[in-house]
Length: 143
Image 1: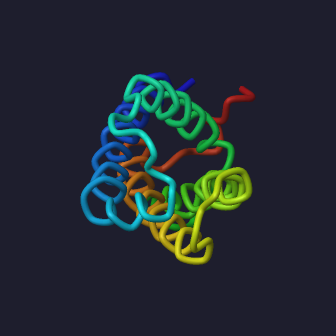
Image 2 (image 1 turned 180 degrees about the vertical axis):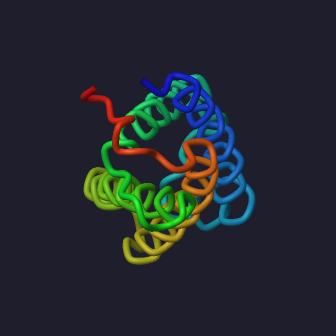
Image 3 (image 1 turned 135 degrees about the horizontal axis):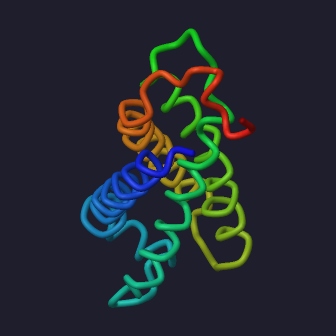
């Protein structure tokens, strides 16, 4: 099993997610998100975000070797896989949040969250691909 790679990828994804998401949500677009009704807490509960990102990072890193296919550069593989995982996260962070809360305008919110998830996919996929490198078929979890 890829314990070292899972730990390193989890650490990298947590750090990157916090840097990117905090900058995106609370610096670059803070006024827009607040006006849309999505940043409702004056002080976010950081501990909950940390737990969520740790779980995300572990799952991301654990599943990656199952997805990996020889041929593309490992960084390209990492970005492709991260785009798939971020599409799932976007479904919740975009559409479910917009459905549950009084987000207005919804289209602006969906576009901004889409951009955030694409950025996250690229910036988490790159280190994941570098950390795991080329995965040989004989190195699968099933053996």
